[in-house]
Image (cartoon, rainbow, N blue to C red):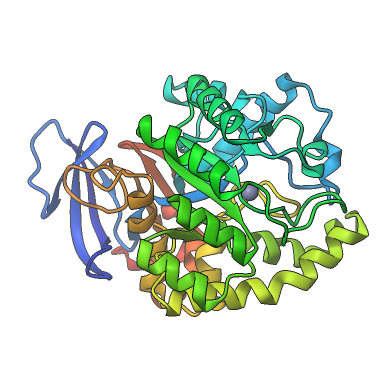
Length: 410
Ligand SMILES: [Zn+2]
């Protein structure tokens, strides 16, 4: 057994820390309490550290670069270049405290190969739940992201496209219920894309194959269609009003807000300057509308699962946990609620509540830690100093941090 000793351990259900040791057997947590050490056991001293379940990001694009304002700049990369980039992005993501990520739009299935390398121990990265290519009607957005889109028009083509993703190794199906914000001028985020019938076709194939469905939806009518079709999560939800949010709350449909996509970009004037003017106007113009919708969703009891849209311009791989702080600062949550939305709720959305989302006996030993109490200052989650995934330590900078050192006997 490996023991993490002397740390403050977070209980997601109670929303509180307590001092405890964690016993880890292989990939999983065996027990929590006081260490009962056997001679062969190993220990890692966590004194002074604040331990949380590894965070789960339900909306990433690991294959997309983030340093150019013009999304079209990334469209002509070779698959080999994309693979190398994706492996780097996956490692950054893990070291930032994200031990599980759901990718909702990859690039020519390159991310599947990266997942294989991670699982075989040849690359470092989070546990990955992958959508493969996203399903979309024929639209201008395809020209920005040719490796990401699988075009399908009409229910039969949607069924075939959903089957293609599953055959390639997808864990979920991603559908475009409305237009995108980061798209060419010909595409409108308020426009309906897949019809109700097409969305139902995607849900049918997903359900038949024990997969779930994530629906990109900004416009109200698109959200209503997606909820009516039975999708599991609404991505973004920018123009949601109380009527559709109440529908989501009643159906138990998750909202994956992606506040980061706006905030990280707007904080970066250098990248904004390289952006096509219509995108700059859209991102600046929709930010407050989106924040208000997320705030309202939280108030109306819509289940929320953390998602960042990392991979969009300025929204960098590895900075994902900024989203947790934004749920407090922008969406009006308490730190306890925000942490719940980044751990237990995503585990439920991924149907992994027995494996992920809490520091509990039987679950995977996916544990992160910071040097100060994140319930006092939620920004602490953006300074993750310790990362363990499946019982293996990928990062441990606790000893070099002043706050952790201070607490140790001198
Ligand atoms: Zn996205």
